[in-house]
Amino acid sequence: MAAVSTQIESRIDFDRFSRLTRAVRVMAWSLRFVKNSRCPQGRESSPDLSSAEIEAGRIMVLIGVQNEFYYEKISDLNNGKYVRKTSSIYQLSPFIGEDGLITIYGRLEKAPALLYDEKHPILLPKCHITYLVVKDQHELVKHAGVNTLITAVRGKYWILSLIATKIFKVCINCQRQESRPCQQFLSPLPEDRIKKIAPSPFSVCGVDHAGPLFCSDTGDRKLYIALFTCAVIRAVHLELVDSLSVEDFILALKRFAARRGMPSVIYSDNAKTFHASDNFLRKKSGNPLIWKFSAPLAPWWGGWWERLIRSVKSALKKSLGKSLVTRSQLETVLHEIEACINSRPLTYVGETRNPLTPSHFLLGRSTPMNSVNTGEFSGEVNDLILRDECQSHYVDMFWDIWREEYLRNLPPMSLKKPKSDLKIGSVVLVRNETKSRLLWPMGIVTKLFPGKDGHVRAVELKTNKGLICRAVQKLHRLGFSDETDVAETCGLSDSPEEVGKTDRAKAFSSQEEQMISRRGRTIKPREKLDL
Image (cartoon, rainbow, N blue to C red; front, side):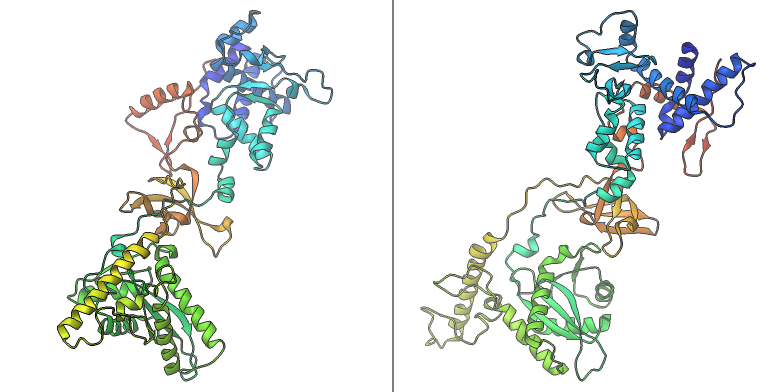
């Protein structure tokens, strides 16, 4: 019977099973078939398997696994010999148990409260069946923590290389609840933000909308603030617009360009207004304006203008409160807030001199109307050429202070190890703050968007609703990919079954006709038992 059972086990490819119960039931039905074939008089015809048959199938599956990995050790133990000292299981004092399985001795032999399996756990190698055993226990303990799973497994089995922690990496239910968002190195500041502006301030700027606001003379119509900020000197320019339409934004951009100059590079988020404005300017304007958009739903990409929007909102709340003003009054308040924000210090406020502010680059002085200290260039100079040289001298002095005190005091780059190893084919969970985590959609990475430093900053995903683009911080990587086998993900690819599986795959691929399922998987032909 043992020889026939071993032959049955060798003819069944357990690598194709995803659950231990299926493998055990297949073995149990095979054992019943063999029994009915040999003893027709006592034929078992029940449509269901008994608990004894299922237990016999489980034991036979484990015996087959041990025979494959520990054949020499089993032979030594059956012949009354000890396991060799060079063996990895020598210190476990293995022996053949009552059911023919290799079990180990323990120090709890005389514990009356423990069962036999707890005193002498079954020894299992590192293979696919072992993974199914741990996975089955993981589901029995209702996806509990690692320590609980280890305790449950050790109550019946002893696994040399316990894969409890790796089970969580391929368990969809656990990953959906416990996975953490991907992280990445902080990217270096782009050159547009740290270089001296040659033409004028606002050559490189960021733009965004804030609001809505209401006025006493406009009824229920919503008003919005268009904020422009210089990427280098951190100055702001505020415009009050009537709506978020493309027409109103283009008018605000024209007013901004008339007073500050037309920018060469604009950064913004992915609002439809900005995309439409970019298309309009590229078609109608001959100015080579470069518009750069951040990833969708990634406001931290534009943190250098989002922080100024917060300052504007805070100033509005504290200055107006619940007051209801007219449009003209609101526009005046916005201009005053703009002047105050442009007067904020960019560098450390010391006791020797006035700190550097954005107004020094815009006006040559701070916003309050007190004159700057000209030193040797006093007000007695009447020549316009000398006055122009005086102005250039102070602008150069402001840039020197900006470089020495502001640029060098920017926060350093974080050197923490990133938690993003996304690649094409990775399965991720797409974060959505408006929905419960159970309702977050899953997606497959189809394209990577690395930054100039080579690190992946955003990816393109294939979801059930189509292709979307998201920043890596919005993704929770699951511990598998659409092309990764479970055994390979858990580090079980070094088992001997892989050799036979590869040979069978090569032989099957040589056939001219192959059966393909609806999901594109190759269907293997059934093998008959040679009994």
